[in-house]
Image (tube, rainbow, N blue to C red; front, top):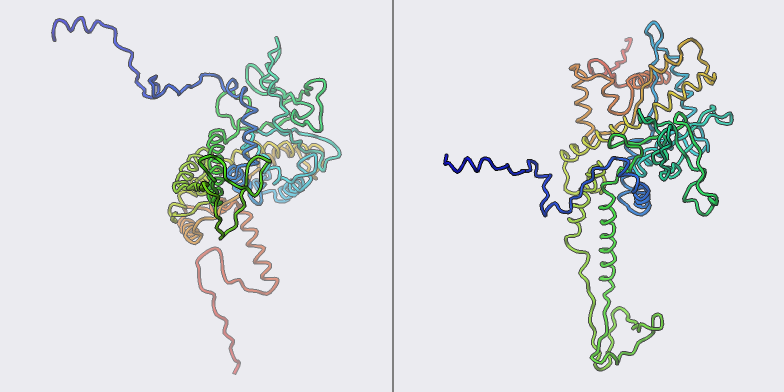
Length: 491
């Protein structure tokens, strides 16, 4: 070590960046990140995000496809079904009470029961919730108790626009209000919702002459369903927020390619001359632009000095399909679904790739099943159960009946058929025979319950006996061939 090294070591070390992602060079000059709170980022753009997402639903085919996939795979044909498993004090299943509760819930879920306007069934309401949360970012439902309702209880749909996001207030000694939601300052729990008396965009039917009028609805009367991305986030944003820009740009590009291809197929052209005259038109468009009529398979002699210049754009571009696929893959990733599902494109796929993609996608849908159960259907059922038992709507007596049946709630979302059913069924049989799987595990994959499966098999056997038929299979035990029946002659 030289003597001069002593002086070089005394210099203050340079401030090096240990993370390349935090670089401030020219390559990151346009990477302007924000350190604002969740509500501070959402408030200025909430209305624009919601309106743009709705516009994509109306006019963009891929956005409509995405929402359709959510309705099909999260709600499905049968919705999210209730399976009561309440037990008596002796540990036995209360079959009678469970059937009463299930039948009363089925009556509530029938068309005309769940909403105060009588225009929805429970499956319709589930579709409304999953669509609204994905498209608008949040759904508001107000709980209503009234004698005119079928069971004295129903929900009222409230659009997110009705919760005034411009209402932000901090009253001294009171609760702060953030984007129309009054919250407890210490716990951040919603205390009340400030709802407009009329939709702010209902221009044709409503006039807010005296300004915005709001009604304060206590939080216990409102269901606010959304998926927060950050802590202390008061309002929800559309699930497609990271894909909105790409969806809009891709739609515009597809439109431009379509128009260019149509123009190219028309084989248009222009008449030119050195002096700009000498062209005799057949007519004029808007009394200004000269038009010359041409028929297919005919040739015309042009006036002296007039030349014809063809306009022949080469569209669609040969790279259009590959470019669209690349953009759609990014959009599908932002939406959480597979490219093959979003684009309806199974070209070049194999059984293994389809199965792997289907398994990952179904795990995503199962997380949404749990989201719908935890945030909507289970809280709704528990409050409905307390209402119908408290007011004697269903004939169940006894002490602690609400706690008893609340402990026996089980929900079944839709199941999924496999890409190759024979292989999956054989695998399930092997797992069952070796004790790795149970009937409950297998039934759950198909959105069913083992009790329901056993009951259906028993009904089939009883029906076969009633018609004096012998079933050619036995679902349990060793698989033995059906013995042949031989008629014996007495002689």
